[in-house]
Length: 93
Image (cartoon, rainbow, N blue to C red; front, top):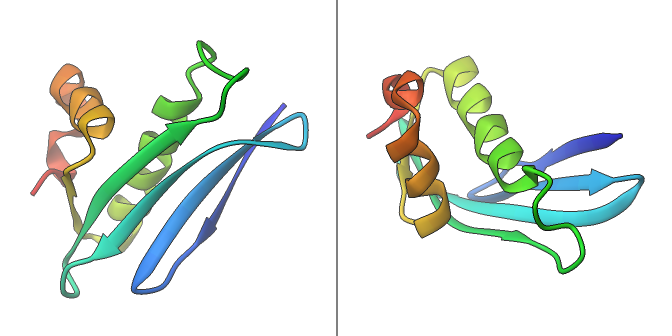
């Protein structure tokens, strides 16, 4: 079972846990009140290939939609998820 936890603040992060073990994280920084920048996404060794990185990006998308804000995906992985998913364009800055 996977679980995602979020810490919000000027600099925030989403952490993903797999079987209660920290499996990865995605960090972001607020750029004003209406957008945040995803700057890093990482899945720890041994947890690759489970789609956990994408789950982190989708958690950020849900968060952005709930706050009616936009995302700038500067992280190459997050950008690739946005590039492959036209249904996420509504939150793209």
